[in-house]
Length: 197
Image (spheres, rainbow, N blue to C red):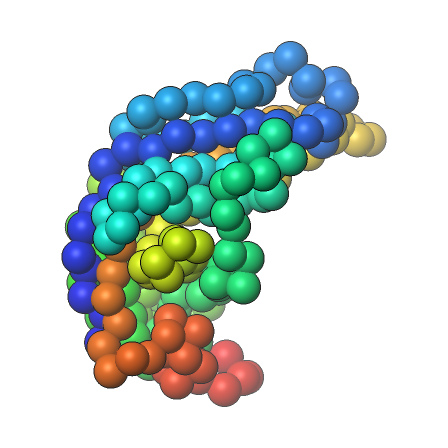
């Protein structure tokens, strides 16, 4: 169904634009960070964009927000797809198994979730479930990429609560092939269970 072709070992990150929360303006990176090894975690308070060499064509593959400073970086936003929660009540077992086959850092376990036993994909090192997979394509050759990316949004300080900068966690990215000419979006549609979950 899904075959892992290549892992992406490192990438570049760009942070740009107006800060989401002014009070945290000087607490997060701004500009470009190069040759970052995966997995990585960093704070953010503005738009961001990741880029890496496409393992299929050698061009620059990009995911994230449009960066007006680099108009030559092609983003194919139509290819950006998220699975949502990867749980047995939402997806059929073959799809969950296919996702686990792509990423080295996860495993499929049965866990008690909201009072019932169900399959769940968990991070091997952390022991916690990870929620979703992001999909994108190289704008040049349409190579498919799946990524374990978690974004925790920045939050302003409000009545009695302390705000915080955002956190961007990128665990793994892999270039993949999808069998029988299907798309990742098509697989989600095919294997997603109908509500109620």
